[in-house]
Amino acid sequence: MQAIRNRYQLNMPKLGLGTWPMKDEECTRAVRQALELGYRHIDTAAAYENEAAVGKALAETQVEREKIHVTTKVWWDKLQPADMRASLSDSLQALRSDYVDLFLIHWPGNAGSLAGDDLRRSLETLAALRDEGKALNIGVANFPLPLLRQSIEEFAAPIAAIQVEYHVLLDQQPLLDYAREHNLAFTAYSPLARGEAAKLPEIRQIAAKHGVFPSQVVLQWLLAQDHVAAIPKASGIDNQRANLAALDIRLDDEDRALIASLPKDRRLVNPDFAPKW
Image (tube, rainbow, N blue to C red; front, side):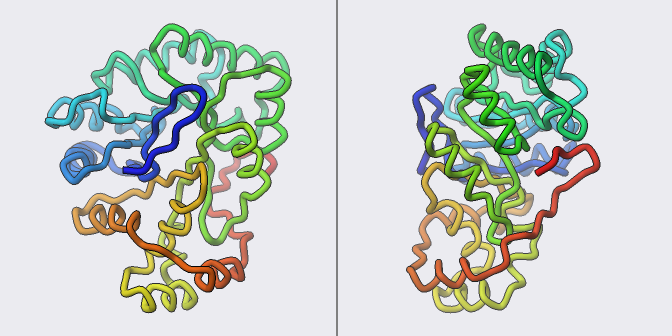
């Protein structure tokens, strides 16, 4: 499977399985099934309350742990050094693993409150956890561009990846340009715009032209982009197979122009603790 690699030796498959909001046996079954189909990238988080279910699937699968990329995240109320360390320790125990492949700050504090010395300490702790081998790579999620720039340029954080909402209805070009400039993996969550994108007549038109599902068009548009990965949630085997098959679709210039004509201001994930975008 196509993967994103960078100077931090990150090796992350471009297509992953998102696990939110699956829990318990549904989550375990979905992860185990995805691994059997060929997925090698699983995304979870402490806040999803499903790391133990993911860990059960990792223990049950025949796929060797070192061949599976696992991302998890620390919640915004656990960003002090001791709390962050405790969060990762709990995550590793739940995941039944000695390490995670990528450990992210899930949100930059409450309403973007992570700043100054607190930001520096959090980033230093992330880097220390990487140096100790508990996380092979580190990164951030939901950081707006000024905060990402400060993290890298002012605090020299060895960030390998950023994860944000990204799909055909939300423009993230400035952030994506910066990620490419600094060789970061750029993971798109909610890549199907929570099902809204597949309902668009323009997307349906492209899908009909290629004889594929609308969701596959939306995914391929993301996966074809340099440095971009996507983590659609899929619990059923048919949807998991369809998402995998999206890797083999090829859109043309006419398709991309039609997608470019869509409005790009539809942010679907904007909780009250989100930063100022």
